Image 1 (cartoon, rainbow, N blue to C red):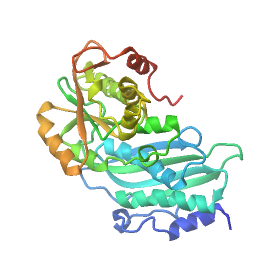
Image 2 (image 1 turned 180 degrees about the vertical axis):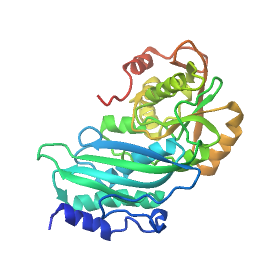
Image 3 (image 1 turned 90 degrees about the vertical axis):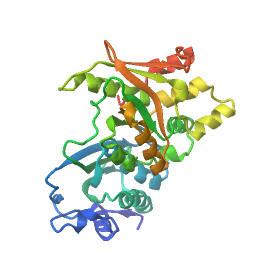
Length: 341
């Protein structure tokens, strides 16, 4: 049988490995797939829930002919990245899908990718919904991920202070470049949520955000967060060196092949989305601890600038000598990054 009905699909999930080895289901009060609602086991006395939700739409966020296993991985990964940015430990997630039909080989591969990451991150699927969309309508996947943080310790966007360093994890640019060139690249297809980094940044970072909509946009979110916080609002300016950006191997190869100039590559890294690395601020006194954390996780952590007091939130790019970026890079930054509408 090529296709499944909704109840057959749910039965397949109930019989599958969705909950194998997951701490969530070891609690006697936990309840997952198969009832009207899931039941979350009691949290500890000093714990809070962190909740993140993201939607991926066919033709907008992924190609119709993409590999279903990679897509299943990514649908969950982008939500886990939000939990990572909050310094949260994954607890569980729900999946809702609008599908033209439930195609057996395709959906099995999709679930394999999703549930493999769920097991790896100890974040089981506990419920959701499926519905049919029109024959010509795009398919839609929406995940809500739940995480746990110690009360009052979550990493937030509004914590930057004057004098803080600005850091990014991993490398930048490859996902946006691969999307533009329609290249299959792991950075685009199978992003790795930086969960261990997020947990390690608790107590070290002053603020954090994941780079889903482009570095420039996320920097502005951090600056605006500092200005809008309820306690001690602060106007800040981000001062960054575009030549210090940790470019990805795909972008570097394009530079070496003469298909990109360095300012163009930097522009892709600054404005391109779909990165799912972490951008965070931290006091200069934490530099040695952050270097040690990066080494412990075998993950590059790069200091790309700092923040100062300002009369308005602004992101200021310079080169190593303090000069403004080339005009081509200024134009790319002015055009901005990813927009949802």
